[in-house]
Amino acid sequence: MASTRNTVKRPLSPHLQIYRPQMTSISSILTRITGNALIAGFALSIWWLLAVASGPEYYGFVNRIATSWFGDIVFTLSLVAVWYHFLAGLRHLCFDAGLALDVPTAEFLGWICVIGSLLLTVLTLILI
Image 1: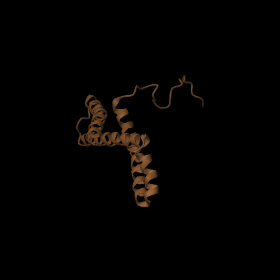
Image 2 (image 1 turned 120 degrees about the vertical axis):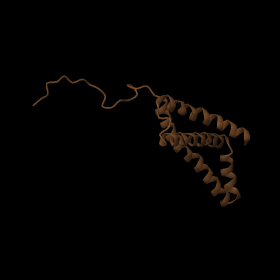
Image 3 (image 1 turned 30 degrees about the vertical axis):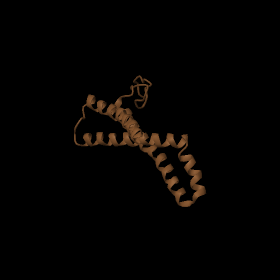
Image 4 (image 1 turned 60 degrees about the horizontal axis):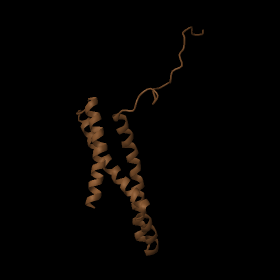
């Protein structure tokens, strides 16, 4: 038996066309991105350590890459990721304790993670 209701074509699930991005969703996405981005800095560091153990010629090759503009970008972005991931972890500890669950506070803490990670990265680079 066929349905006599009028059907309207709607998306099966809400997407970016329906909802505008919010700081809470952006900070969740950034946490995942920075967690995965840490792998690049970790991999370059491990490659460098293995090169140290492999001998002077191979070490020289890897060290030139690690200290080049490419290595500087990878390590700087990894530093941003470390600070963001650290601050986002503190934010989630607050959430797990039942604190700061209202939308304005959650959005404020998301901005604290973004701005704080950038400021802490600059401070770290100045101190190093």
